[in-house]
Amino acid sequence: MPEVTPIPLAQLTTLRAGGTPERMIDARSVDELVDALRDVWAERDEWLVLGGGSNLLAGDEPFAGTVIRVLTEGIERLPSPRPGFVRLRVQAGHSWDALVAHSVAEGLSGIAAMSGIPGTVGAAPVQNIGAYGQEIVQTLVEVELIDEATGEVSTVPADELGLGFRTSVLKQHYGSVPTRPAVILSVTLELAEVGSGEFPVRGDQLRQALGLAPDATVTLQWVRETVLATRARKGMVLDDADPDTHSAGSFFQNAVVSASFARTLPEACPRWPMAQVREATRVIPLERYDGYIAPPASVEPDVKVSAAWLIEHAGVRKGFRLGRSRAALSTKHALALTNRGGATAEEIAELARYVQGRVQSEFGLILQPEPVLVGVEL
Picture (cartoon, helix red, strand yellow):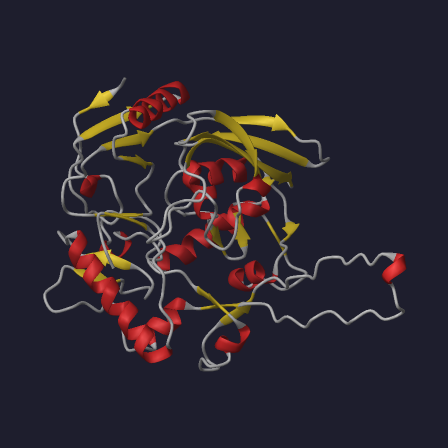
């Protein structure tokens, strides 16, 4: 088994915090990854799978267990049963942004708006990553995974993963465990063949973010470059020289609340209605039909509200820090908690707790962390 000298997690995570694990394994092939996981699970050791380290806040104390680094790479092009589409099977350790760049170069549409998102492909379905109106759920066909409970490898269709807003049955939410503890080995996406020429961009949110009129046409390369420039202005593209990018991206999720609660927030707070939940089809046996069908219940869709707006309007401005803390909000984006140089995990957590408290006090809403927290409490 490819065991290596443990490296401090502060060197392997984009938040640049975290102690040194007791043991570390580098898995560069699917077989090495499967063997390592089965061995660790058989030993009932504490374990942590690490990809790009872009969605993790690890505690300052040494991790008392085994960290398995997923370093598998590779993209396989497969036919699709749908005319005009192509499938890509991608290894879990492959860089997500490298995959997006590859898809754009190949003229494949469906993930270009997610350019610049750090991390690995295997982590993408766990979080159902998304940006500017695109989410991986829109293109995901299936994943190959290994279940912790059985150690068995299987192929699971996307519709069995419980993909929702920044969640899935695989995600470890703060304060809970995954519904299905498992590790993704590969991901299969289905993308549209649009080529290198101009094409119409679908989705109101994406067109609005790109500043496009409804009938505008652009190239995939233009979409990628525009998204990367937009993310860079917000400090959301990794840059060693820019402390604003030493973060886990958005530390807090945009909150999804009921329509009635959203109405209690100031009108200026940006909000986006979620998809309307349709009532299930009703079948009434003929012998019970009395000529009357009750009208469907009127259900307002939930509303997604801007966490960044809530933070800033709770009085926590961009660049804010507590006293002499080495953790601070990004000077470019209020959702990013950043390490300004040498900050401990506890300093970052202290800032997160302060932000949560301010928003709760002002608006009655508790923001939920987006990264996985290991050995850290909010």
